[in-house]
Image 1 (tube, helix red, strand yellow):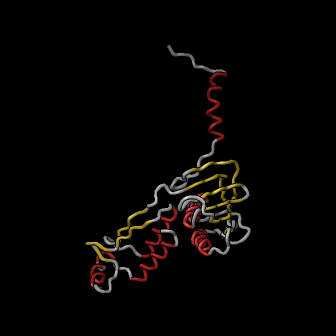
Image 2 (spheres, one colour):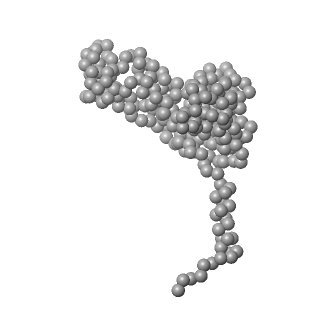
Image 3 (cartoon, one colour):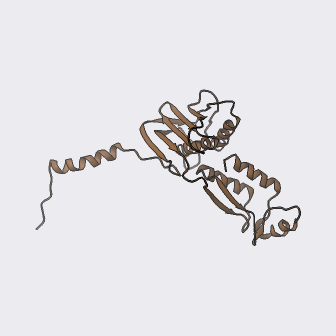
Length: 240
């Protein structure tokens, strides 16, 4: 015999807490790697094409440079990101916390980023970049609402890196730089760039020029010294 279905106030009251919970809870932003701590608050900051960046110390040349390195690719997608006094995003170094750590505070009236060192400031800006993703065409149109939140982040592991094997198959310098851009986005700080092996020799050695002349013929080519220096500099600017 089929049991009667329960209807009435009891069933509705039983379901109400779950409905309220789903309506009131906001999804946590998808940040990779996940910060040490992330606490959401009410409200949001509207990040648009004219949002500016204000360095806490305008005389800190390294701080100005790292902000510029971070902002340059975003500008190609439509963000202006002017750097100077009065910017809604304030970035500074205060020496508080462990190496590469930072604190990011987002409120309706602006964004405050404080870091233990310059690497931490760069990582904090990368987190901010993940909070304002472009559309499917890589463009920023209108404004992006960044939820009010507090992030306190420090690397769980001091060595975070990947291996790029350019010996087995040559990787052009531009592709290596694109690789470094992705590493910077996800706060990976070490690149093991393999330049020589039994399948190819990609690095020039003055005493033994035939190594790269012959070994570089296999699957692609070899780097020049200038290209290697350029990649190393490019990596260092991204704290890799």
